[in-house]
Image (cartoon, rainbow, N blue to C red; front, side, top):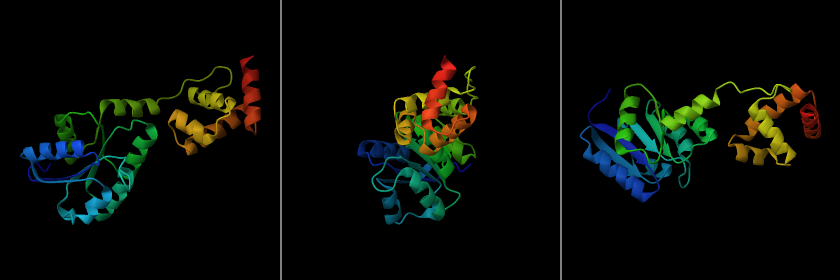
Length: 212
């Protein structure tokens, strides 16, 4: 692990958070170069020495390109650089989009400076780091769903059917359940197969029949 002269870049549009992180890292002897900017675009406009860059700490919701979009741009410049998301977002879509884009850490805002520093060292040592509540969310996401004894429907599938009964669109279902529209379509395809139907109206009718 690189233990001295670490070059870190912080991308954060909230000036209070940005300046706080910058001040903290500058006070730590292991960090030899600290860059703090407000957007992904500014990272490229400030002539950052990418070959020397070790790690990037970025928010997701930023002016211009999002932190998730920024991961690809940063890794196009230096594939081996590590990226940690520091954000308020706790929904599964944002977490998985970040990880799929190449993030190696996901920390919630409100974490202490010491925890953030620990995450940096963990990642530079070849590991990954997530806030405990985020790690728990990922574990829960991959747990086998409990089944409905009558129709063989999972809890998530029942949630989606109830949304269909309310007349919600795929987009609104996705927003309510904090999943992507593609995930909604995937579940509905499974629902059609399990209930042996071909339309939303048939889903609703069959669901109520199974409940009788």
